[in-house]
Image 1 (cartoon, rainbow, N blue to C red):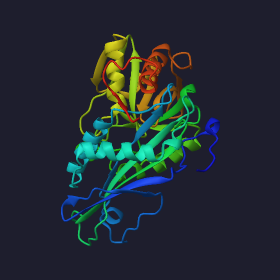
Image 2 (image 1 turned 90 degrees about the vertical axis):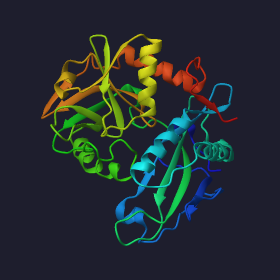
Image 3 (image 1 turned 120 degrees about the vertical axis):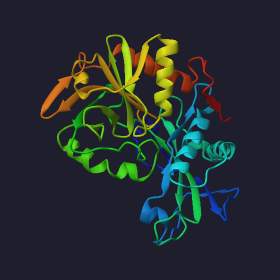
Image 4 (image 1 turned 120 degrees about the horizontal axis):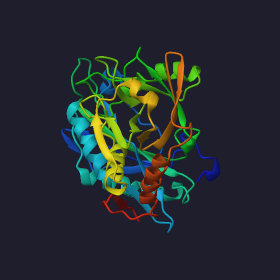
Length: 337
């Protein structure tokens, strides 16, 4: 194993030694195998390369205080993957097979799970059309791959907070498109707008709805939340927003643990300028405070410009459950060993 400095982990690829691969030929998935991490050969005529028939998930394994390893709501990721497979016309995976394949691979790569409090093991399942095709139609063969990497914070600042820019000259996803699934093509379209905002001193883009450019959708690859006047609001799911597992967990924690009023609704972009607290959520981002919002050359400081009290409380509860420091009252933790 390559020596890893656990104290300087970033959100970058440090591949674990083993990966998992399975193939679907003649309409059936094989049992798959764990192999050394490396390249996956595909034909230049593979459907994923030509027509983007591919999907992925983002998950993590956590080293807990007692040195055990656990995952967080993995069957929810399996369900979401299969929902996306249906939308992209790809063969689904048995949910138990999905979770057990990841579990077995974690055990093979357990030395890559960072020590308690030093980071997490990021898990990336990918399913794509590997069969050859010239016309626009579904592939006749599919490949399922899982690889893993120890990671630190997604944003360099971590929980210290980020600056985002509202843009209405680019949109993430149209209604009734594929914005509610983790399709591979969704993320390529975010690279250019993000680079423009980074050049202007921001960490990420906040996208508005494609129909009116009025209502908040997502922060790059993360769900969005606003706390204002005692109400925690998040954009409602309607076909263009990813139903994040972390998003759902935060809604549950905010309501059931802290008694906050919850609203899933359309949020106008100008409501943000007077918000008490803002944050974004995702497996990679966890729960990251938003301290500054930019819009058309104006910058708006959120609250006192520091991570908010409620944001910190929800973050601590979420991470506490994942790391075993707080009671798992909702049955979310899946023990690996």
